Image (cartoon, rainbow, N blue to C red; front, side):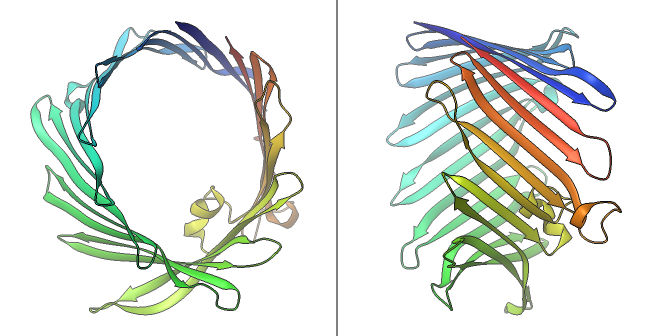
Length: 350
């Protein structure tokens, strides 16, 4: 028999507001044998807006779970989800029933997955239940191309609108060359075929074998056209990498040469360049704390008054201070405005 839980409180402060309660979560659980009961109560902006009751157990080899969510502030039903999963001859089978408001968004989804002759497969079908109707289905397979040590995947999808939706084939980490003047080149590509559209998206990854920072990638893509397909050009759209110093302290960087790729490389669409440092912090009771700082830069011409185009500075750390108490801190400081944000998270565990 086991009993425990946590209380998590997040406070925020910004120029327009001294201190406000951003969210509060109370989670408690009680377990006896295979039966596990949980209660989640969530407050957002001081409003009690979510209460979830969850139960999990096993009936022989079948795992069962059921949860219901409500909004206590409005006395409103949010959702009910029930699932069952089991294995039959090394094939995993699961079924999820989801009831929500409005009822037309409710569905039942059946998923079957497994491995056959080193091919991992997954098939799923989703049905609306109010009214009862077919919504969508897909069949996917993934396997290792042993001759070239590359990963291959194929997915075919259908839906209730157009019938056949798409056929997608993917290739990842296909090595073009291992050592060309100290650079390793690999190819990732996806082919998407629809009734009214065909698209090929190849990406070239170049990894220089530099002693100081071995984990560096030059990201490139091909421009293809015609039938048969021909390569028109190859362009480099970004670089990213990480270097480890001292005791697991890592310096990382990312630079986007195309504004449409900013989000994929730096994590923020408004900034084309990022420099960061992260690493462990001493913490209590066998757990490990962490810290991370990042500087984001805007592409010239940057707003006046910013150093080298520095647009945003972020910092964060997470520590277990005592056996039953943890603390986390996040901060964002835009350089072109005073809209800074500080977030303090307190977690009490029992």
